[in-house]
Length: 184
Image (tube, rainbow, N blue to C red; front, top):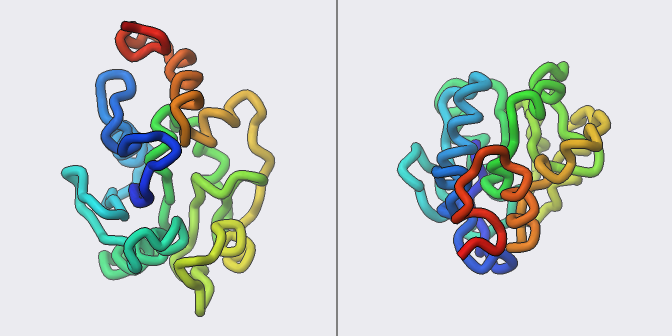
């Protein structure tokens, strides 16, 4: 599931539709999810962005609200495990997810970072609520918390501000200069 909810207030524009390397953020994250074997790939938030979609319950209920809505939809689709990705991390690479994908049940999220996460749907804590912090969900679900490789922390954390976006774009190899910081 790709979390696409939220107001993108720190970014100033919808993070899902911003272009990164010739594709929107949501397209890049969806392609990565499919490449590592996620099926189905769904978005969770206010808009579908052209992919199978579930609305946040309640709308703008925070990331845990999105995870809970996505977990219900994936469970109904017959899934037992979820890869939870944030749309604001479109520079993630398959290698960045390898440790999480290889984790034993109930799943894992990097220490100090709550997304991406791999979560057994049966581990979603009873009574979990939309307003919870992601860290509480990860703790109560019993997720492993492996160390995040230092050289990829910024890429895994993603971009919530224009400055973070510019820094990640500057590190993307072979990108159009029109997307680079300061390009005219």
